[in-house]
Image 1 (cartoon, rainbow, N blue to C red):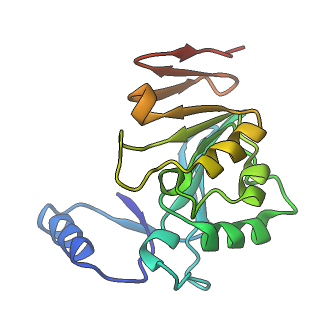
Image 2: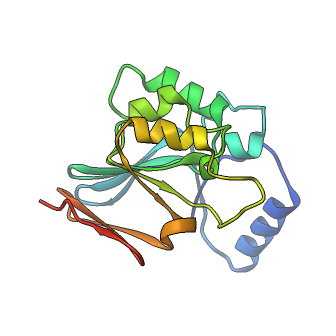
Amino acid sequence: MIIGNQFESSENYKKFLKIINDKKINISVVNAGTKINIENNLYFDVLWPDVSNPVSENSINNNALVCKLNYKDFSCIFTGDIEEPAEEILVSRYKNSDILRSTILKVGHHGSNSSSIQEFVELVNPDVALIGVGKNNRYGHPSNVVLKRLQSLKCDVYRTDYNGEISIISNGNGYKVQNIYVTYNPLT
C-alpha cells in the first residue's frame, strides 16, 4: 500500500494505521519527487505532498497524495482532496514544465469552489475531467464556478452523480471513457 506523508493525526488515521498493523500490510510512504514504476512504460510520478513544504491550512485535504499516472502517450492526474493552497504550490512548482499537462484530470475535492483554480486547470489542460460526487450532496458539489472553468477548457466533464461509475480504458495511445449512461471513445 502506498500513502503520502501525513502531517496531522486524526482518529480515522489512527484506526487506519491499526488496521494496517493488525493485517501486517506493507506500507510505503511517498513524497513529491517519488517515481513508482508499475511496468515498462507505466509509472506514477508523485507530485504532492512535499515533506519540506507541507500546507498547514486544512492540512488533511491539502497534503493529500497527488499522483500523475503515465502510460505512453496517456496520462491522468489524481488530485485527492487538495484545494487552492496546494494547487497554488503545484502551479508555482511546475508552471515552467508540462508535468501537470494530462489527458485526464480527477478533479480535486469533489469540484468544490475551494479547488480547481484557473491556473491549475489551465496547466493540466485535460481532455476529460472526472468529478466524484454524490447526488444531491449537502455541500452543493460540484461548484458551478469549477464547472465553468472546466467547460472553458472545452474538456468533457463526467460526474458520478450524473454518469454513475466511470471507467477509463487506455492502450497508452488513446483512451475510452465508459460509464453506465454514456460511452465516449476517441481511441486511435
